[in-house]
Image (cartoon, rainbow, N blue to C red):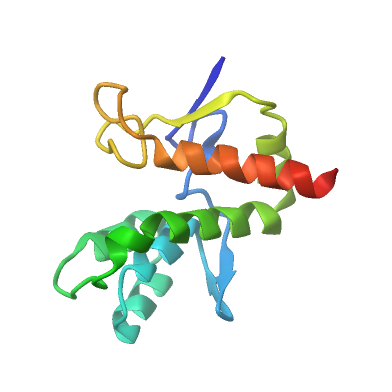
Length: 147
Protein backbone atom coordinates (compact mmCIF):
# COMPACT_ATOMS: atom_id res chain seq x y z
CA UNK A 1 0.00 0.00 0.00
CA UNK A 2 1.13 3.55 -0.67
CA UNK A 3 0.34 6.39 1.71
CA UNK A 4 -0.60 9.55 -0.15
CA UNK A 5 -0.72 13.01 1.40
CA UNK A 6 -1.05 16.56 0.18
CA UNK A 7 -4.18 18.49 1.20
CA UNK A 8 -4.94 19.57 4.76
CA UNK A 9 -8.04 17.36 4.63
CA UNK A 10 -6.12 14.17 3.75
CA UNK A 11 -5.83 11.40 6.38
CA UNK A 12 -2.05 12.00 6.58
CA UNK A 13 -2.18 15.80 6.37
CA UNK A 14 0.29 15.98 9.27
CA UNK A 15 3.01 14.95 6.81
CA UNK A 16 2.57 18.15 4.81
CA UNK A 17 5.01 21.00 5.34
CA UNK A 18 1.91 23.23 5.55
CA UNK A 19 0.66 21.34 8.63
CA UNK A 20 0.57 23.51 11.77
CA UNK A 21 3.56 21.94 13.50
CA UNK A 22 6.27 24.50 14.06
CA UNK A 23 10.00 24.03 14.41
CA UNK A 24 12.78 25.87 16.18
CA UNK A 25 15.80 26.83 14.12
CA UNK A 26 18.71 28.81 15.55
CA UNK A 27 16.65 30.03 18.49
CA UNK A 28 13.69 31.21 16.37
CA UNK A 29 10.26 29.58 16.21
CA UNK A 30 8.76 28.97 12.76
CA UNK A 31 5.00 28.30 12.45
CA UNK A 32 5.52 25.42 10.01
CA UNK A 33 8.22 23.57 8.13
CA UNK A 34 7.11 25.51 5.04
CA UNK A 35 7.91 28.82 6.75
CA UNK A 36 11.40 27.69 7.77
CA UNK A 37 12.14 26.03 4.43
CA UNK A 38 11.15 29.04 2.36
CA UNK A 39 13.20 31.38 4.56
CA UNK A 40 16.24 29.10 4.28
CA UNK A 41 16.50 30.05 0.60
CA UNK A 42 17.66 33.53 1.54
CA UNK A 43 20.53 35.22 3.34
CA UNK A 44 18.69 38.56 3.59
CA UNK A 45 17.66 38.77 7.28
CA UNK A 46 14.74 41.13 6.71
CA UNK A 47 13.22 38.88 4.04
CA UNK A 48 13.74 35.79 6.20
CA UNK A 49 11.90 37.54 9.02
CA UNK A 50 9.03 38.52 6.70
CA UNK A 51 8.67 34.87 5.82
CA UNK A 52 8.84 33.82 9.48
CA UNK A 53 6.08 36.26 10.38
CA UNK A 54 3.79 35.22 7.49
CA UNK A 55 0.36 34.34 8.86
CA UNK A 56 -0.03 31.13 6.84
CA UNK A 57 2.25 28.62 5.11
CA UNK A 58 0.77 29.63 1.73
CA UNK A 59 1.90 33.23 2.34
CA UNK A 60 5.34 32.02 3.43
CA UNK A 61 5.61 29.99 0.21
CA UNK A 62 4.62 32.99 -1.91
CA UNK A 63 7.35 35.09 -0.27
CA UNK A 64 9.82 32.25 -0.78
CA UNK A 65 8.91 31.88 -4.45
CA UNK A 66 9.42 35.58 -5.13
CA UNK A 67 12.67 36.47 -6.80
CA UNK A 68 12.56 40.14 -5.73
CA UNK A 69 15.24 39.04 -3.27
CA UNK A 70 18.01 36.79 -4.60
CA UNK A 71 18.14 33.23 -3.32
CA UNK A 72 21.38 31.94 -1.89
CA UNK A 73 23.76 30.72 -4.61
CA UNK A 74 24.17 27.24 -3.12
CA UNK A 75 20.44 26.58 -2.74
CA UNK A 76 20.19 23.73 -5.24
CA UNK A 77 23.09 21.97 -3.53
CA UNK A 78 21.72 22.31 0.02
CA UNK A 79 17.92 22.23 -0.31
CA UNK A 80 17.53 18.48 0.26
CA UNK A 81 19.63 18.63 3.42
CA UNK A 82 17.69 21.65 4.67
CA UNK A 83 14.40 19.83 4.05
CA UNK A 84 15.64 16.71 5.83
CA UNK A 85 16.75 18.73 8.85
CA UNK A 86 13.43 20.60 9.10
CA UNK A 87 11.27 17.51 8.65
CA UNK A 88 13.38 15.73 11.27
CA UNK A 89 12.91 18.64 13.70
CA UNK A 90 9.15 18.59 13.16
CA UNK A 91 8.76 14.90 13.96
CA UNK A 92 11.22 15.06 16.87
CA UNK A 93 9.31 18.00 18.37
CA UNK A 94 5.67 16.91 17.99
CA UNK A 95 4.45 13.56 19.39
CA UNK A 96 1.18 13.26 17.38
CA UNK A 97 2.72 13.48 13.90
CA UNK A 98 5.66 11.33 15.06
CA UNK A 99 3.25 8.60 16.21
CA UNK A 100 1.37 8.82 12.90
CA UNK A 101 4.61 8.57 10.90
CA UNK A 102 5.82 5.58 12.88
CA UNK A 103 2.42 3.90 12.46
CA UNK A 104 2.98 3.71 8.69
CA UNK A 105 5.30 0.72 9.06
CA UNK A 106 7.30 0.23 5.88
CA UNK A 107 4.68 1.68 3.55
CA UNK A 108 5.76 3.95 0.73
CA UNK A 109 4.92 7.60 1.41
CA UNK A 110 4.16 9.91 -1.53
CA UNK A 111 3.42 13.61 -1.61
CA UNK A 112 0.54 13.75 -4.10
CA UNK A 113 1.61 17.17 -5.40
CA UNK A 114 0.34 17.46 -8.97
CA UNK A 115 2.38 20.57 -9.76
CA UNK A 116 5.65 19.49 -8.12
CA UNK A 117 7.70 16.76 -9.73
CA UNK A 118 10.67 17.38 -7.41
CA UNK A 119 9.26 17.23 -3.88
CA UNK A 120 6.13 15.34 -4.92
CA UNK A 121 4.88 12.88 -7.52
CA UNK A 122 4.17 15.53 -10.15
CA UNK A 123 1.38 15.61 -12.72
CA UNK A 124 2.05 12.13 -14.10
CA UNK A 125 2.95 10.36 -10.85
CA UNK A 126 6.55 9.93 -11.99
CA UNK A 127 8.07 12.78 -9.98
CA UNK A 128 11.06 12.37 -7.66
CA UNK A 129 8.92 12.49 -4.50
CA UNK A 130 11.86 13.85 -2.49
CA UNK A 131 9.59 14.86 0.43
CA UNK A 132 8.13 11.37 0.61
CA UNK A 133 11.64 9.91 0.47
CA UNK A 134 12.75 12.21 3.31
CA UNK A 135 9.72 11.22 5.39
CA UNK A 136 10.63 7.55 4.96
CA UNK A 137 14.25 8.31 5.94
CA UNK A 138 13.12 10.21 9.05
CA UNK A 139 10.76 7.35 9.92
CA UNK A 140 13.72 4.93 9.80
CA UNK A 141 15.89 7.25 11.87
CA UNK A 142 13.21 7.65 14.54
CA UNK A 143 12.62 3.90 14.65
CA UNK A 144 16.38 3.27 15.11
CA UNK A 145 16.55 5.81 17.95
CA UNK A 146 13.65 4.15 19.73
CA UNK A 147 15.12 0.63 19.61
